Image 1 (cartoon, one colour):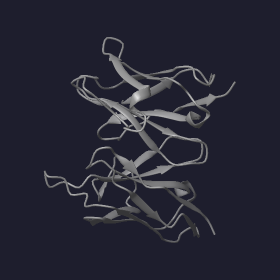
Image 2: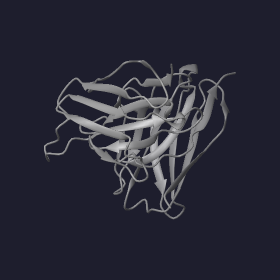
Image 3: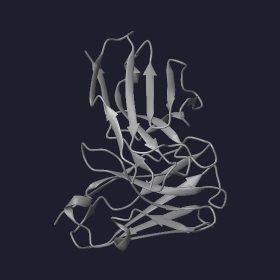
Image 4: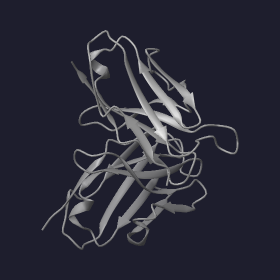
Length: 114
Length: 112
């Protein structure tokens, strides 16, 4: 069955770089894309970035300068990097199948604090 | 970006009752291919969003027929009949017709 699972550090210091991994199973990254969505505590959902099945990428324009999304198809993993972290980046980060958003991971909580 | 406006923000309901949630977009969600990419999700506390309805009115696998979606253009509605305890949580609409995809602000379905 289709599964996505996020992993990454729970705590990151301000101004540092966040690295998150989404490991998928039940489908191929060359057949489906993967996106990242985040949710600050008690708030709504915000789309961040996506990598298409062909390998092209798209980013939220407000965050684009700080983001990088890539993949390792041999490991069925999608990697998200966000630099210059600020406290406002504290959120639950989800990966979801793109463009359908039909399957989501459980999420990983990232806290930006010194 | 397309702005998705959900109402109400909070919706008290009785078990066994009916609930209706509205989602309006700032521009038409009809894609050039004729499809409308408006979807509905339920997020239970501590969980990730789960797809209920895709492309306006299609129930996702395993979703009970108590959930129904309707609408067109810029105006969409999710209806839940015979509300059960497992239906409580936050509901979100999502449009993926236009780039970037955008979510509604959410509606909290809670017990009256």
